[in-house]
Image (cartoon, rainbow, N blue to C red):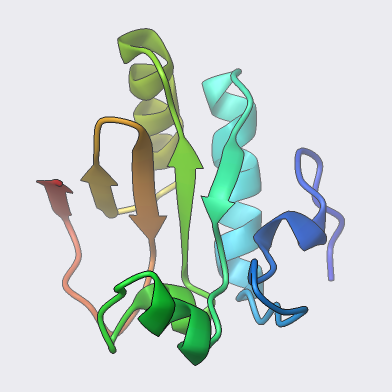
Amino acid sequence: MEELTHFKHDEFRCTCCPANEMVKTFLLMIDYARGVAGVPFKITSGYRCQQHNAMVGGVSSSSHTRGWAADIACDTSRERFAIVNGLIEAGFTRIGIADTFIHVDCDPAKPEEVMWVY
């Protein structure tokens, strides 16, 4: 796999086991987005095995379980703006905004050009 500039592949592994089946396309896009944003991206949830996904209350069709998604921590409105701007510039069209994190995915099985709030 191409080297990532801003991340280590391990940052995206499941937090309950060593599973890490992130999709290369997703990783390259989020790495580019991080460069555009100019702020660190702390990944709080990347790949999730089915057991971990169920444990955290994830839906059965979660993009995390197929390696197409990540959640990025954010604390301030400026940081949130920079992250979202970077994600859009990188070509992401599925973004969820919460108080303390941003969900991003590029799951080809789901509708594009959507943004939602938690």
